[in-house]
Structures are given as C-alpha cells and as structure tokens.
Amino acid sequence: MRVALVAAAAAVVLAGCGSSGGGGTPPPQGPPTLRHPAAEVDAARVAEEMRAQLVTASSLYGVGRLTDSQAHMDAAAADYAKITDRVRRGDALLDHEIVAAFPVIAGQIAKKEAPPAVENRMGMIQGQLLNAAITNAVSLPTRNDPTLAAQVTLDLANEAQRDYATAAQTLGSPESKRGFQDSFGLFTRALAVIRGIGPALGPERTRAIGALGAAHNDGFPLGVIQPKSLQVAKVNADVARLKAAIARRFRVS
Image (cartoon, rainbow, N blue to C red; front, side, top):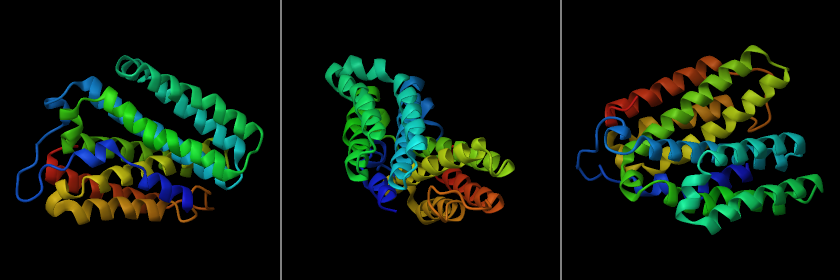
C-alpha cells in the first residue's frame, strides 16, 4: 500500500537517533525511565501514537473511507493535545502550524478532495512536523537512547495486540472496525520505529524486526480493510517473539 510505505519511510526522530549498541558496544539496559525523565518518554510514546492515527487516517482516505479517516484525524488531534504544551515551550510557531493543520485537513475531507492532496498534508504532519515536535518535547540524550525506541515499540505493539484481539471478539460491529483500524496504525508505526534502531538491536535484529513484520503481515493481509476473520493466535505469537527479542537485548519489557 502506497500510504503505508510513505508512513514507514517518513523520517523518524526516535528511530534515527538510537543507534548506540552496535559494533560490539553493549547497549543500555532496562527501561529508559531509569535514565531519562518519564515525561519525555511519555511524550515520545504519545507522538508515535499520534503518528499511528495519521497512518490509519491516510490509509482510509486512500480507499474512500472518508468518515473513518476524519475519526482518526480527530484521535490524532487529541493525542497532540497531550504534548502541545511541551512543543509550544520550545517552538510556538511549530505548535501553531501543527494545530492549524487539523482544521485544514478536515476541510479537505469535507470537500472530498483528491487523495494525493489530502494524504500529502497528513504525511507532512506525521513526518516533518512531528519530527520537529519530538525534538522540542524530548531531549537529545533521551532520543539517543535506543531503549526509548525499544520501549515505544513495545508499548505500541501491546496496544495494537489488545485492539486486535478485542476487534476479533465482535466482528462486524463498529467497535470491531475501529479497533482493527487502530491496531493497523499502531503495528505500522511500531514496525517503522523498530526498523530505525536496527543496528542497536545487534544479534536480535532479525528476530525482532521479523516478528513485528510477521504480526503486520498476519494481522492485516488486506491492509486497513478488515478481512472476514482475524488471526489472533498468529498475531499473539508474533508479538510474543518480539517481546522476547527486545527483553534479551535491552532488558525492557
């Protein structure tokens, strides 16, 4: 899917910085909150949850699900509200630009504008603008710690796994559709983040990335469009392998 590829290719501040631990150097051990402010770790997680909503919104718009797309844009705006103060303190103009983008996109969706124009504006938020937002909300030492990306990956994957399992229990319902869509975005972002710290994963690189990639492939054979049946057991097994690989490498769970 073109939108998913754009999302995965977007510059990722968390993933791009946490490269220590390669070349035989032991990586940091234990949760990032042992070394960095919990507020910064939370801000990084929220930013990636916001990106997950933008990924889903963009994917849904591309397949003509305009109402669903707007619902996920609303969720992305709600996520941004959790970190807007931190971003504003560092760059008030950036904060204003991000906040102002949401009503503009809502107007585009209401007018049923062509997907490329709408998807490109969504992509600008999840890429360039959120990279700058994370830079303002999360200090460089925290961003440079690969356990931050590892922890965020696990948080996203855990949330995605829960949403997927819940969606499978009520197939055909509005709640199931929303849970599946949320899970799609979360797994997509988790995969982008873990790929970005590939060198830091050391000997666990293939296992960790492979497990998360398998979860995405097993869970979403039709992308953001929900299939008739969901593969809960396969997704659970894939996420378990991801957790084991990250725990072995970073002692993060």
